[in-house]
Amino acid sequence: MAGTAVLAVLGAVLVVLPGVVVDHDLAGASVAAQDRLKAVNDVRTTLLQAVGGMVLLFGAYATWRQLRVSQEGLRATQEGYVTDRFSTAVDQLGSDKLETRIGGLHALWRIAEHSARDREAVISIQAAYLRTHLPWPPAGPQAPAADVPINDVVPLEIRAADAQVALTGLGVLLLQPREQSWINLSVTDLRRADCDGLWLHEVNLDRSCMEAAGLYHANLTQASLVSVNLRHADLKTAILRRARCVLADLRGARLVETDLREADFTEADLREANLRKADAGCAVFRRADLRLADLRGADLKTADLLQARLTGAVASENTRWPAGFDHATAGVILTEDPGPEPPPLLQPTGITTQHPPLRSLP
Image 1 (cartoon, rainbow, N blue to C red):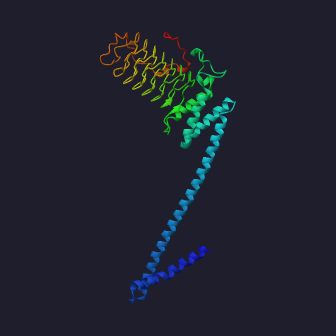
Image 2: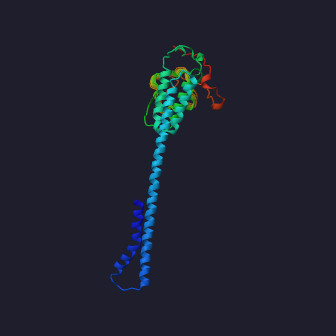
Image 3: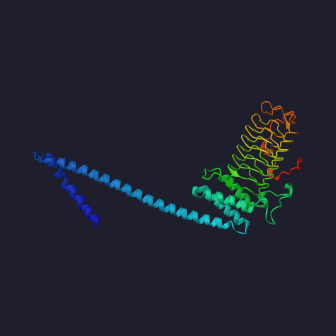
C-alpha cells in the first residue's frame, strides 16, 4: 500500500512538476509550444536522473546495512563458536587422560592464534597450568625428587608431555603483541625443559629450577631470573639482555655467544660456566663467583666486575677487560683461544646431554 502511494506521488511529480517549473521560469512569457515541450522534457529528464540517483543511494545504503547486520550475525556466531571451543578446551585440561589434556592445550593454542581477544586468557591459563602441575620443590609421587641427580631426570617432554606442550605454546604466543607485561612462571620445576628458540621476554622465573634446560637461542630479554637454578643449562646464542639474574645458580651453564648486555648477575654463581665469546657489555657481575669459568673471547670491556671472584677462570688474548682491570692479579689463567664455534647442527640436544659432575659443588 505504501509503495503504491509512493509510486503515485512520484508519477504525479514527474508529470505535473516539470510544467510548473517551466511556467515559473517563463514568468508569463510567450514561447512556442515546441520549445515549451522541450523545456518540460529537459526538466523531467533532470528529475528522473535525480530520482534515479536517490534510488541508487538508497539501494547502496540498504545493501550496506544488510551487510553490517550479516557481519554482526556472523561475528556473534563465531564468538559463540570460539566460546564453546574455549570452554571445551578448558574442561579437557582437567581430564585424567594425558592425550585429552594435550588436545585441550593445543585447542587453546589455536584459539589464541586466531582470536586476539582470547590470547591473554590463554597465556594466563598456560602459565597457571605449568605452575600448578610443576611446582618447585616437586610435589607428588610421579615427580622426580629435588635431590635426584640431573642425569637421572628424564626430559620434560617425556615425564610431563602436557607441560612441555603448555610451555612451548606459551613461548610461541608471547611472540605476539600482548597487553600484560609480565608472565608468572616463578617457583616452577622446569628441569630438562625444551625451551630452544622460545620467546620468554619479561617472564618471571624467580626461584624456578631450570637445571639442564635447553634454552638455545631463546629470548629472555628483561626476564626475571632471581635465585633461579640454571646449572648445566644450554643458553648458547640466547638473549639475556637486561635480564635480572641476581643470586642465580649458573654453575656449568653454557653461555657461548650469548647476549648478556646490561644483565644483572650480582652475587650469581657462575663457577665453571662457559661464557666463550659472550657479549657482556654493561653487564653487572658484582660479587659474582666466576671461578673456573671459561671467558675466552668474552667482551667484558664495559662490565662491572667489582668484587667478582675470578680465581682459576680461563681467558685468551681475545678476552676484553675493563680499563685498568688486572686479570692476572684476579687469578685469571691465559690460554689459547678456542677458535670458531662448531655449527649448532653438530651439537647434541641440550636436554639429553649427560653432564659431568661439577668440580665446584659446595
